[in-house]
Amino acid sequence: MKWNRTLAASALSISLAAAAFGQGWHQGKGRLEGTVAGPKGEPIAGATVAMRLEGAGPDLKTDKKGHWAILGINGGSWELDVSAPGYQSRKISVTVSEITRIPPMAIQLEAEEKAQAAAPQQEAPITVGGKAVSKEAAQALDKGNEAAKAKNYAEAQANYLKALAELPDNVSLLSNLALVYYFDNKPDEALKYARQTVEKDPANQAAWLMISELELQKGNLDAGQQALSKVPDERITSPAPYLNLGILFYNKKKPTEAEENFTKAIAKKPDLAEAYYYRGLARYQLKRLPEAKADLQKSLELDPSGKDADTAREILKAMK
View 1: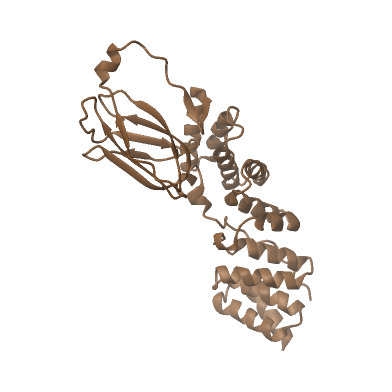
View 2: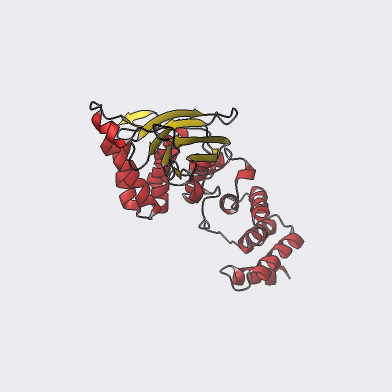
């Protein structure tokens, strides 16, 4: 009797939603704090400290003492844009370390009227990830981020591609492009930009996981397994990659490897009926009938009316 299976639909295993659309800046151990004051040293409450690392980051507000602080940010070259009503804004670059704590920053803003009286100054260049870009590219990046958050993936793609013309090596932008194509069900484009991401950043586990996901969905066992090997098991929170690997091994008549991956899937989600069902099939192929029977019964216990329930009952009946 032959039971070939198709791959299960799945979500990315590392928390891509949290990392998506420029949110990967808050996964480190760095910290930054400071005060914002006027020309006479008076604290400015409600000033905005817009922090950007490769185009992504938070907008902070100062408290009544002009103080601001943030923890858990990634190390790297951050761009700060400090502004407040009635004052001239300032742009500051600061390198954050995840090992050494930076002393609090004392930021002073000039009064707006003084700025107007001063001689006209050349507009400060716009930088993203330490690279100067045009105003149009910066605006396209911002529009892309907003569209992505609103799940308007077509608009996000169009704007990100505009920004990419000036930022072809920006890892965050490449990663975001992969994500908006992934969520827009365009796997070929998603795979293209995910691979470009790991070319620039070989340690990018989220991108490797997406590559594994997409290659396995295409039935490319070796490529999917190789990509998944780049991600430590403890960083994989979903059973889907192991479930899909197991199904591909099972369909290639490799029940031992299939069983191993179904067991890993169960470790990630012990109440996943599908994983017990598939492991039961693999153990049936291995002629380990008591274990196969236990798995198939467990799958029915967890999901008695699921899509695989009738087949599980058929196999159990054949085993008597």
